[in-house]
Amino acid sequence: MLIDRNTWLPPRLPVRWAVRRRRWECMPNTLASNLRALGLLYEWAARMHEGDMDTLLERGLHLDGIEIEALIAYLRSRALDEELSPSTVTEARTLHTLANIAWPIREFLKWVADPQARGGRGTIDPRDLAVYRLRLDFAFQPAVRRSGMGMRIQPLTSAQDACVQQLVGVVMGSDGRVKQPFCFHPANPFAPETRLRNWLMYQIARELGLRRSELLPL
Image (cartoon, rainbow, N blue to C red; front, top):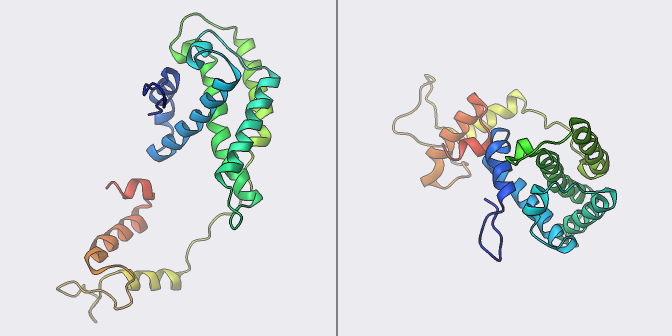
């Protein structure tokens, strides 16, 4: 949940967006990252507009072209701050960070523009809503474009897969059965008290394709 640092209260519209829409589309860690991005939107709004951002949006505030450009410029500066390290900062990492924060802000602004979606009163002309959303798509396009995202991680070869299984798995006897009691390869990189757990996690992830965010809570 996004919390205002001064009042310790959650902004209304980000909570509605998270509960009504976004939580059905992503995992909890992604949602948490999205809410942190919306925090930057509210920080920017506090500098640009006098008054509560929730109230302004509920009254039908639509950002004009100059405001959208100013918002994206602010996000670019914050993305650079997040990556400000002489030894690690690269253009690709900064662009990736910018995309991670710009995309949820754009989607939130597109969602909140519709009074019916955000739980408000009144309606908006569908044509006006479509035009505003297209304006947001066009203005945010350079910011949400990620760098280096097209390369797919190649799967392990059969030989590599066998080596990993032997390294982290339990020792098998000559008959192909698991030795009792369990014992592990001498080169196993994990601490003795975590080897059984990590082997089970590895087997579940390998056979079922669970993501880390799903596997760790399990």
